[in-house]
Image 1 (spheres, one colour):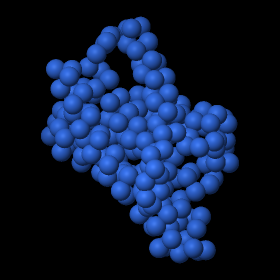
Image 2: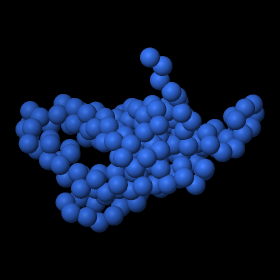
Image 3: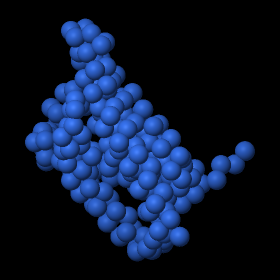
Length: 194
């Protein structure tokens, strides 16, 4: 059974071969890293926690760029953060930051971007319902890595309820809003390219 591999949004414009394609890909990676830095520092006041646009950027970049370019963008962003540049939410950076409570989520971001790229190649990003489903899958991947790391760090001391509350439950309202936004924006951009 053959699976159709669709174009992703980043392939729908500009050069498609040679040096022009490579220049476009480098430009997309740089633009993606800038978008991640900006989105990581957008804080919308909400209850119970402020919402950042970080996961929105991670998942939409994965869908728009495809697996390879999405992963390259996320890895570039993570390397900059590991090198000490303040690219994450707040002023935190450096290798030590990866050992803290958000380390699992950061790894999950890269994996989720790759998964989103795979789903986009299968056409999930072209409809509102497909993109919503892809966002659910991508968000699940992020939580799988993030909660696993949080449990490793805090389960013995604070218990499973605390890990779930501070590792996921507090963020669900914001994640639902970002899911709706991405489910409208990405398919809308596809309509503009047609």
